[in-house]
Image (cartoon, rainbow, N blue to C red; front, side):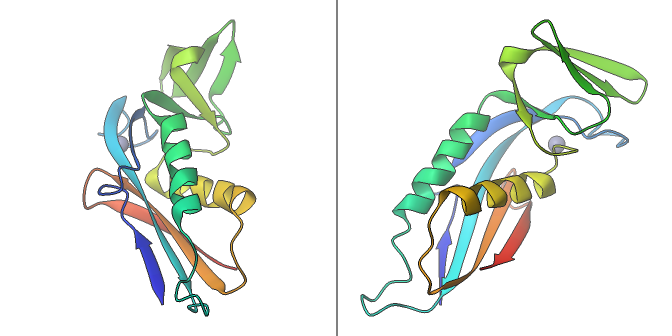
Length: 155
Ligand SMILES: [Zn+2]
């Protein structure tokens, strides 16, 4: 069986700015409305549920709040450095200079929907306790409605 959490209807959303280096259009600083979706697969327990997914929703809302109204900075990217409360991000032949307080530094190499899905998945595996009957989880990060990237993990 599968439990599905739709980020748009569950209000697990955030608005953020990013840039995708080496990409003609997305290589310019721009923003999206994002939503975080989840799927939890496993057998139904004797209590008639797979798991109480309120803890998953609360966790995902927390992540969305953390990312909301920030510039998403991939701190593992080669051209990123922080100095005197500013983030410098070299993208091709330009360099962005952004107040650090407006940014969130993420442990990824590029701030794409794909890497954000993996980031949320890894964080969820660290923070959320899943019962033994849960076999597989998926996290989907939508960049606008109807387009997103999904990461999946067997437990
Ligand atoms: Zn984009």
